[in-house]
Image 1 (cartoon, rainbow over the protein chains, first blue to last red):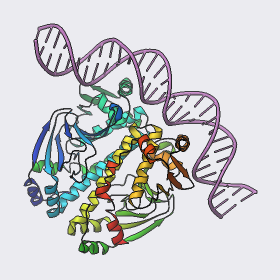
Image 2 (tube, chains in turn blue, cyan, brown, red):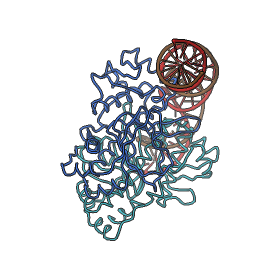
Image 3 (tube, rainbow over the protein chains, first blue to last red):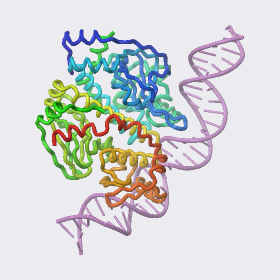
Length: 238
Length: 238
DNA sequence: CGTCGTTTTGACCGCCTTCAACTATTGTGG
DNA sequence: CCACAATAGTTGAAGGCGGTCAAAACGACG
């Protein structure tokens, strides 16, 4: 895990930052619209998705507090995804150009960002495995295991229970299943006594069982390397 | 597209580089084995994949000449994927630590790598869409469109025809389909007169038709931003 | 000529989708 | 405070896409 010196942290804090607040369902960035922003989720959950023909939508990532949703957007690289708030979100925003400048003078900031980007691509790879090779129960089980593990890493889980703003529609868009089938799978998981999922709250009763169903191996999350890495920036700019 | 100055190129060329040659099917890097290498494909095609239970395998990316297969591997970040040569490959290899050093003294190298990493994550996102929401013919059509477009960008396609070392098994592992079904889809595509695929050679007869089947929109490849970017490094170290 | 990997073929089955309702919950304005 | 709309969750029946299993044809290569 990369650590920053006091000097580096104060230099970071000196960068001009803008705070953004959006309500659930709002679009934060739209595909095709040129922008030059770097974002950090401070509170809430956001998603990156693509809209497909037929009203379908594929969610490619969920961004929890401490995540960088858009690694780096520049006008000459057309944004090809939508960034949408799943729940009410607050984000910190910086100008890409200024951040790149900062990386030139403080290389460790860039290395820290690089570290987080690596973890994000690793998660995306695992999602390819998830939608590519796992059955419906496996997909959902794996997704829930991942989210709980990542939420736990940022202190948002107590006793395997956490606030969970995702609807079954979100889960279906992330797993490539229909919302009807997600519903049936949820009931299946409940009936097996694995979890409780209702009223925006998720409680896991049988972590081992769920992890086995989803073939969940947290190695790909690289928690020892990344855990709380962006908290440094979050603290610095907040 | 990021350009390098002469000074930056010579500094790059001065870095200690190792050449690697592997034959088709050979494992280049294995998951779990600690390593500290940065790689660049010079010739041939490599794949990153994960082996799953039941002898199944998911391929998450194909790496063509000019691609960075492993963005950056360090011992404290356990490698979670296998890097396997699809065809005979030659790669350039550098030590991660030395490359990071180089990025500190020549920031534009880091920015160039960042640019390529962004494109790679963008491709991975599209793969999630592919396996998540498209039908079998769509998946295969999209994958072929992507590969031909990327091969064309590095000058390996003439008149919509190119060498194509991927077997139907590779295609099935990349699309999350069975090799039997991939075979049937290939026949379907041939019967429709869209392509010829045999003896390690691919010829597209109806690009428009194939692109429409796969809903292929090349925006996500960010070719204007990335095209040939890594060729600079390739040239420099070769 | 035999072996191994790749491609092909056919029959059967099951997971998940599709379609069409219905219910529960939430929120909003009259 | 309630009527109403909108979103989220639930249920059932029917059908198709792709998986599974088993076996054969094909080609490359030693």
